[in-house]
Length: 100
Image 1: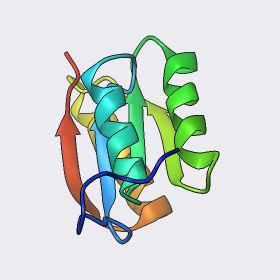
Image 2 (image 1 turned 180 degrees about the vertical axis):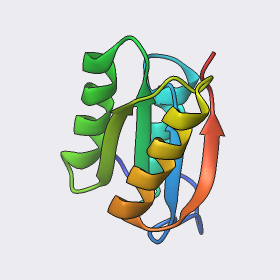
Image 3 (image 1 turned 180 degrees about the horizontal axis):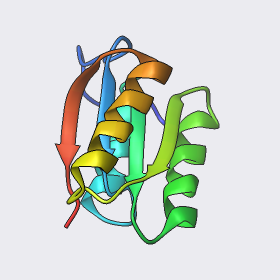
């Protein structure tokens, strides 16, 4: 994973939740945040393998990322998502909502 190309943007102490890590904007955002050293909690709805590949691309060179199934139209799923992200990485400081 290449370094972020945004001078001064280092999110090393930031937990970011990115909804929909399946191919598209969510994937691009997750990879960009991972390159900027954010800890990324990435959701998937239908394409678990695609989200797992994004996590592997972030964690391969030493980044921090997890993936979790979530239906963002379900309040219970979203509550669990945030609880897991915070348990693993600390307080969520950023949300990228690209699902749906």
